[in-house]
Length: 176
Image 1 (cartoon, rainbow, N blue to C red):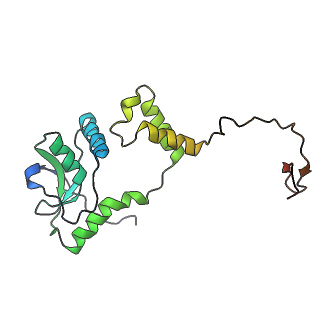
Image 2: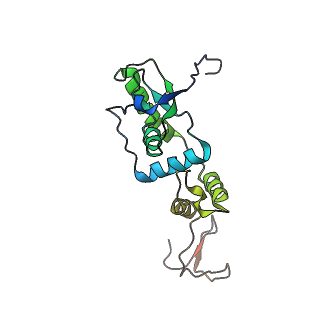
Image 3: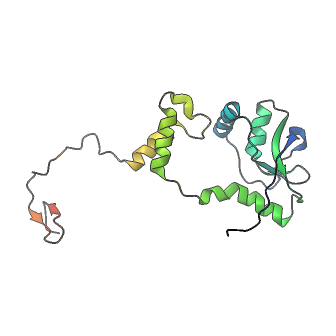
C-alpha cells in the first residue's frame, strides 16, 4: 500500500438549503446524538466531515446537517464529489461512511483513561464527545469488574481440602 497515489479533497462551504438527505440513508439521529454534535460544534466549530454528491445529496454527514439546522447555521463545510447520488459508487460511499468506523478496534483501557481525564474536573465535560457519564461507568466496570458488595475477602491462609499437583490450584468441596 505504501507509495500509492491517493487523491485528497478539500471541503467547501455549502449553504444548508442546497443540501438534501439521501433517500436511501438508513441511519437515524436521535436527540442525544444531536445534543452531543451541537456541543462539539460549539466547542470546536463544524469540522469538514460531510460528503455530498454533485447535486448536494448527502452521502455522509446527515447528523451534521440536522445539527447545523437546529443551531440556525446557514452553511457547513462539505466535500463535494462528482457522483450521481444513486450511482453504485455513491451508494457504496453512503454505506462505507456509515459503517467503516465500526471496523476499528478500541483499546478500552486507554479509552476509559481518556474519558476519565476529560471528566476529571467537570462531570458535564463529556457532553460533545458522544459519551455519557453512565457509559464511562459501565466501561470501567467492564475493564475492572468489582466483586459484589457482599463478597467476603479471604486471605491465602484459608484451609482447602484439595490441591492440583500440576498447577497448584487449591479448592474445597468435592474433588474435581
